Length: 304
Image 1 (cartoon, rainbow, N blue to C red):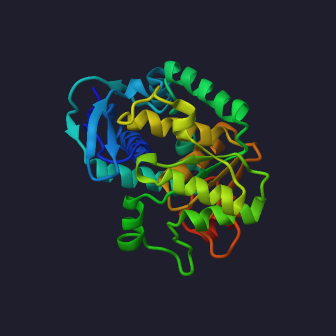
Image 2 (image 1 turned 135 degrees about the vertical axis):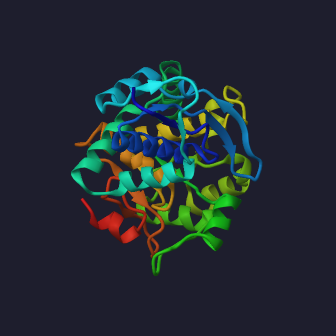
Image 3 (image 1 turned 90 degrees about the vertical axis):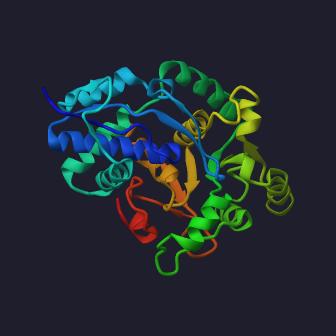
């Protein structure tokens, strides 16, 4: 019988948790092991940490995931793992696999992102939210405003930015680049962020009065249907709306933005996805062409 490896949970945001899971799967393939699935953490970025835990299958299609793992010779088992692995190590492995350009790594990465998809009940709700967003509210593009305090702290103390990289956490600077690049053609514009950490009315006023942009927020789409502390659900909604948008604007430093691009590439490799980045120097956005692989802005716009 194969050994079983796993970790109980990853104390980080949902897209970092996805990369931990990719790392666990890659580790299992490399060591001929089976895995147990972790709990998912509703992890708050405002210092409160993990608010609660939910089952994997409450967010993701577990049967689809198990079938994919089986293709790789990895069984998903229940019960405590024989070998507990560190989720930090799994995150590093997952990040490496998703960014390596070798055929083997890219094949594993794309198989993973193609099959880590929402559970059927959640998918039904997402389709309703997508109809509200893109049909009822006529949203033309999705923009990530990664400006929350935790990100500002990371930019100031932990980020290894490339020379000349624009590491702005200013909503004015980000939205001005959007307006300079597209004018009003991307309005209304759906915003992905942690709304509890962003001054929504202030941002709305600037976008409307200075840039002539109309913004749409998650709270306008989901209302009270998703409680504020259901952070995995709320992140998944933002993620899936970004995935469905014809135009997505983000930063190459964000796991969320990069994972959107990697998932889109895995699901629709021939799609003409219009993904743009705002962390390049200058007053305009730049189209990224790397499928979400690179954190470095110059690599992201040069690769094909």
